Image (tube, rainbow, N blue to C red; front, top):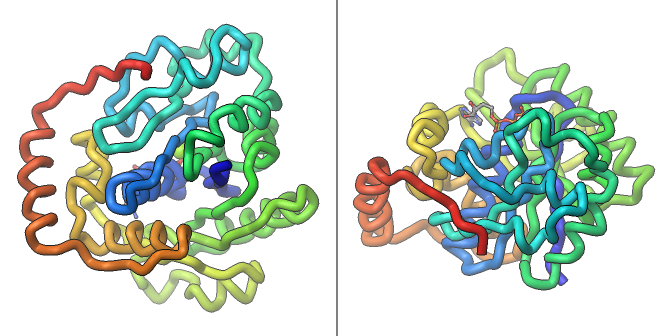
Length: 266
Ligand SMILES: Nc1ncnc2c1ncn2[C@@H]1O[C@H](COP(=O)(O)OP(=O)(O)OP(=O)(O)O)[C@@H](O)[C@H]1O
Ligand SMILES: [Mg+2]
């Protein structure tokens, strides 16, 4: 049985989707794990958009509505991960119940090492559906008080639900004086900071070319942190990529820029 890990946050826009993608790709590509990333952010779904998957006829919406099985809505992405996208159409929100998510996700847990659930922010019904579906959570925050305070609320809900909390990923860190330090965040939340991802313009560039950062710039500082975190999650040692692998990835990503990706369900 694979682990189901929720990527959650109190505040929106802190980097959950970016983390879910790069963690998933790092685990699949560099550690040979079977990874599926599920877009549980139904109202503002971005996972497919970030991965260049613009038209996916079968989505999590249809699975939750009972029209399709979850296996039918799994797409293989060139980066090595499998993806269950959510619909981009507002009309597809009708007639679905996110609280069906736990039972649906369990159906693919045997064929995966890890399933990453990309949550919507906050503690509304959608985010609660994700929390109820996962075994473990990773909290994502930027180093600012409001975001960190929201994590404390999420933590309280996770405590009540008995969900294992792996810790906090501190994202978009610029090491400015006005930012909260990892130590302060740990003291305030009583959670360990398990990764510190720097603010990196390459993340925005990788988004523009629809190629996960760990493939586009595998040797960037942020990529190294994604790789370290993925190694930590599976209890393996992080090793920097060899010059040869970095060169191959760079050449491949040059050609990939021109590719248009039309996903097919598997
Ligand atoms: N470390 C980083 N450095 C620079 N930009 C980043 C970083 N992490 C994320 N971003 C950018 O911040 C924006 C928000 O990221 P993302 O969509 O992953 O957040 P989110 O938490 O999933 O948002 P939402 O709550 O809306 O689902 C994106 O434009 C992304 O490219
Ligand atoms: Mg998101």
